[in-house]
Length: 171
Image (cartoon, rainbow, N blue to C red; front, side, top):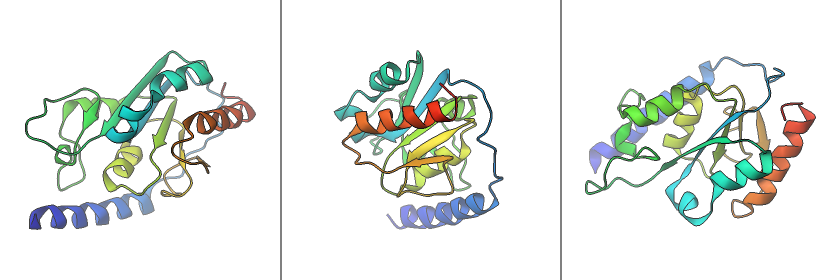
């Protein structure tokens, strides 16, 4: 337990440093959204069908979801989940499934979590997605567009996202 707290403090410092050094990227590209990635918690992904809702409202077919779940040594390695054990002390992901998800050049990444979470924030920061969207009360330096909404009102969140993407001519 002591090591977990120490690891989290080290990773928090690393995340803060990466966020402060983050190069500002332009969100003004006219590239249309064709591939979407979603980062969320296991609790949210088990409650709602976020993947199909995003696909139907935004009208895209290539939607992938990855969720953070609590570590359990009895769980099998999943291509849709990652845990805090999948990130090392340097802030690098060691599991190949999450690494390939983050290295994939997605057109849109949705950070569907409304509480500050170091592991999910690091994943958003390390993602190679062109355009990143999330909740406004998480970390304003991570996203190009932030939406204020309740976490349980996922349809209104995605519909609001659709409006912003239409304004930016990405849909």
